Length: 213
Image (cartoon, rainbow, N blue to C red; front, side, top):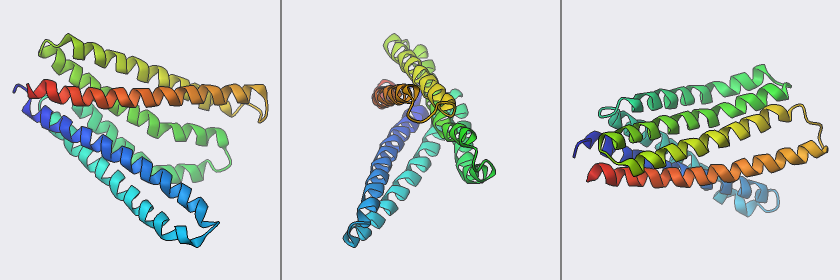
């Protein structure tokens, strides 16, 4: 095994993504139950439990991600940039509340601030995929190298669409035809994000098998 640390690291990154996905689902259920609490208090306890589960899963996801990226960076330097992005993302999440207070009432600025976490996640994914591609090139695996390039292309297009839609949405009057177009564009970008995420999970799984060989 040429990259033992990277193999173990990517295994943890894969687990982190699954935990993050479960956390997002739990958070969505929490929000739904929170709405139902207004109808019947019987949903209060399930809402609290789901909320706690969501926080724990997301926290574990961050821990596994940091540990996995740090381990993988011992074999491939590109993963260090992904680690820097994750650390910045954590710092920004702590700072975002303060920034929203500073720009309170400025909807355009708050929309741009809301883009930062998605952008940080994209940058993290880009460096992870680049690191895997570098190892695939060293291992003479053109299929993995090509798949990584395709994922990066789709992710870049998706993020540019989302950024453009959110950046210019502040200038679009509510109820206008352009607002409807914005919803369509954001919906399309959302579909692309789902496709990208599935491809990314698949790529991580295949990278583990490539490095374990």
